[in-house]
Length: 86
Image (spheres, rainbow, N blue to C red):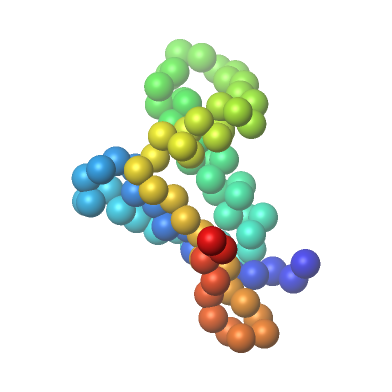
């Protein structure tokens, strides 16, 4: 799959001031970025632990605990961005 620019929209709490976005050159980099967010949060919560492990369920719980998270992926054929399908 070709690199597809991806914008991740995120709101960490109900406070609208926590809205932010991150953009990546590919879907894969966006997924790595989301994992990195979780890993930084784990380090922040557990500063004394040198090696922290987690599984996919832990990552899902982190994402589910956010007020909102969505991704927009650039479609090369139409040159627009597509969000989640309903």
